[in-house]
Amino acid sequence: MRAGFAVQDEATLDAPGDPLKELMDESSTGVPAPVPASGAAAAAVVVRQSRLQRDGLFGALVAVFLIALVRGYPHAQTATGRVVLLVFVAAVTAALVLAWARLIRHPCRLEISRQAVR
Picture 1 (cartoon, rainbow, N blue to C red):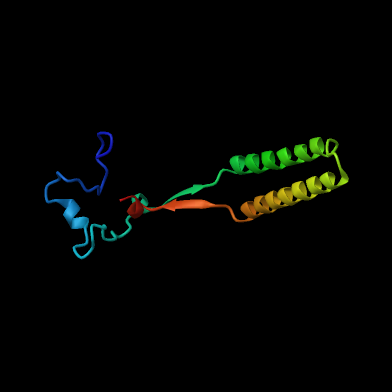
Picture 2 (picture 1 turned 60 degrees about the vertical axis):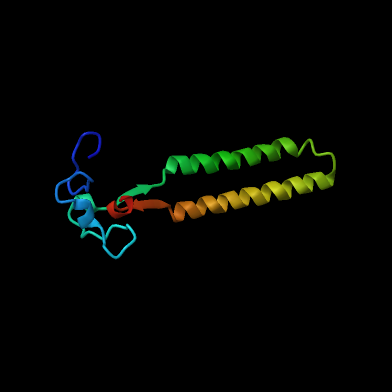
């Protein structure tokens, strides 16, 4: 029972016939036995990554490093400092862009089945 509402096929400790015992595998160490999937209630919940959050994060990080390059290059005291700045910012920006492209091509998702929640 969640928030005063009974959920179909939910096992409770005070239910007659002790359905919690019926859902438990006797040979296991307290892990519920697999219950056959039935209808929409047994379907997995799929949570996909937000494109706005992904693109916002990587876009902001790339912008920060490009701003650091633009602001740092004229203030570098030596030619070596400028080269180090260029190499560092280019390497980090390239890594960010590659990671961003990978996440676009292979988006993350989280699947949660009813059995995993129990």
